Length: 485
Image (tube, rainbow, N blue to C red; front, side, top):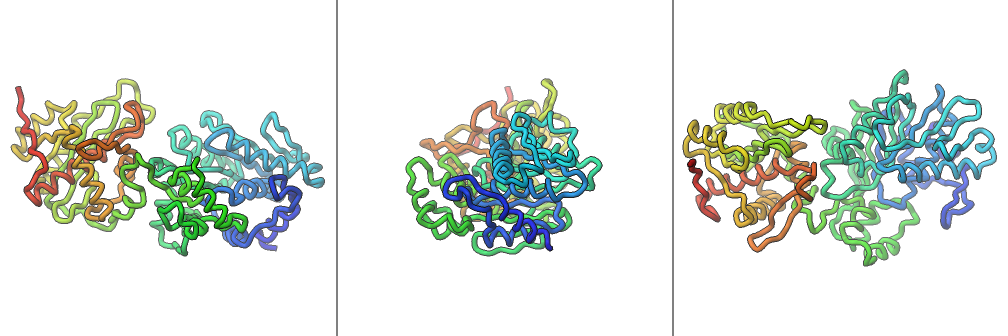
């Protein structure tokens, strides 16, 4: 019997205990059977992105129990989520299945206080994990079951995921199963899920149908099933339904959710459409930014560019970004980010920055270096002495940046610029919080101490703005000439 068929029959022996399914067996639906037929092949990692309320928690709980009972080599299954509460829901679902199944209650023992389900013969266990990465080492899992990966956005959670998926130890390799909804647009480029989806869309084996993308990354042994409503309209229930394959999620239900005054349109799209939806504070929607990526565009030595420079001394990021005059293609030349575990006295390596600027002037035809002066006056003075009037200081006041940010955003939405898909630049663009002013929309961090940096995006705006001026010779505001006392 094939694994998917065996798993489906096992699910039928489990009794559900929630809502209208109380007392009914866990019968897999056609879309679930299709998913499991491929998911249970020889993949190291499987990711299913599907809207909420499509039965994902029940499926994962059933899978964990099936692997505990029928897995080989003393199975150790770890249940993990972005929060202890989420991991607890997954554990509780598995525990309820055990308690309502006479056969399983004899084979397995549930230890609620420890968060463990163990085989009575001592040859396997399911373990509910804390999301604290310092407590995740020391396991040797056969399977890692992750819930809501879209919310694994903090450095600690990324460490936790690395600890979990690298913890095979003596095992040949742990198999990772992940089921999640989409996240918020502003976290798209910070999340592990966002990184996985980017890799999936770029792989060679991708099949697409309305509302569903299936990617098979064979070199990485990773399978991705990603449901996403093909719409940005929270009231387009026909499109929303495409991201909700479960039969019980009806268009009437989705229509009621869209009309719910307690949910914003962005929340409806995210939760019920798996859309990384933009909110009112989103500067550039992730999908619009991704649509401008041109990864096959070669970077030609000697081409005419404008460089944008945004510098920080220690807290944030220093970035040097180029914009080609030929086609307004944007890419980071060099970026210095404060490491997550940096010492308190960490500083941007100023000599490295100076060397990178020199290399850029040597390898490219730099017509202008547009700088934000903050924190770097001595370097800008030296660059001015070296490169003359090609070095300018651009005002970063709201009066100047409002129109510049608006023009950059419109260029993205109209696809009048392109970029190389760089992960850091994409993340910084995604981090930008937009605020309307009388001069236009300005961008900033969510709060001054936020680790979600935007400096690379600011440098890109400076480079693009000055490149456009160089092409049209009609600046919106005169530049401030840099002088030294």
